[in-house]
Image (cartoon, rainbow, N blue to C red; front, side, top):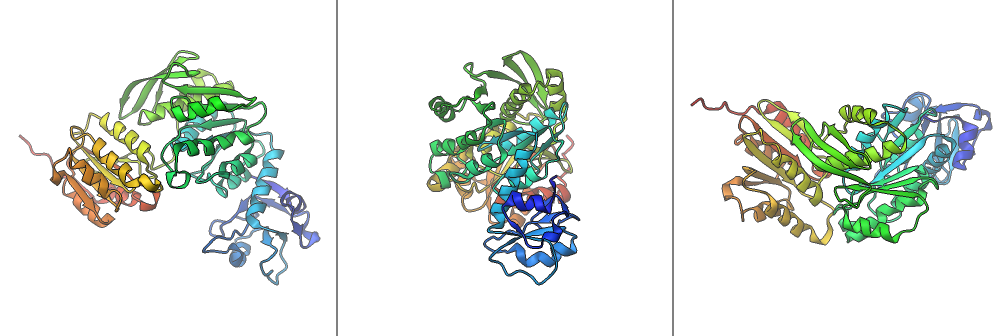
Length: 468
């Protein structure tokens, strides 16, 4: 993490240390949250629509913060404490992160995409750790606040950092890539997520490609070459850096072919630029692509194939993404972190491939942020669900009801249950779960369907199978 004297922080933030006697005091790390602040950290009070961090300065001091940034237009408390006055604390946080990143020798890999960026990050970090001192974005800290906090958490001896970059509007990734200055930029996918903001997938591709604005002059751009919109946009851009594509299509630089998928994970063959049979202990065909993006990045940093396979075996995976949760007599496929049409179809495909279960149930909540076509997109999901594979469809949320309505074309009405709230959903699920069932749980983040996963895991015991 960043360790600097306050006189250096003053310069890096373009602020003003209000009492110069504190100039030689050092801070060790930064925090924007007094609930988790640690001794010696720099407190950065942010201002949001419903909060003002400046009001919690007493808690920051009680938490043994060494100093604090302070917005010039906020009333300064009458206490003797090391304050650095800045015009805007958020901009100062971002400026500090950018300056710190420029002082590091760390190589940075930036990952963006509508789907797959978190899993790609997890896979890649696990591979790189076999050879390098590696750190990655924790959880989902991938926005205008999370990314600078991630950069400022890097130790000076970190050799490679793998960071996520998320967006919901134009110029957001421009800001992030300007701070991170990646040596490798990866785009994993272009999907329907954030169509409400971007209106078209072409605009989403345009926004994701902003990552190239901060790419190092000698850097590498890696992208999913089986996505037509992205492939066409890449043909139009002119950059001096090297470019690699990956996918199943033979036109890609890294060509892969799916092998066997089961509950333990998936095997696949890398057919170009070298031939190698590989295994990754995570579910879903789409994760083959995420693994190949990670492999291409690792090979750029000269990680040998033996180490790559070792890293694939030991992935430290972020939760609630295609995660198998074992309950009392049944299994949950927890993919509750987020949802959009592409990721739902991928999750369904994963569920279909799991032949060892006697009963398959889907629990689908609203897919949010899809814009004007949201109802039609939910209907399309309902029509696409295979009645030969799925026994029950449960929905929760006003938009997800359209999944159930459309599914009636292929399913009997008593196999589709639309619920208004989580207690009702859990109650209805309890009535149909059998031994050796698997239940897919998926919805947009705000529905917090991990509550359903936790209750099912804790409370539900399916009835015993009848002995014939």
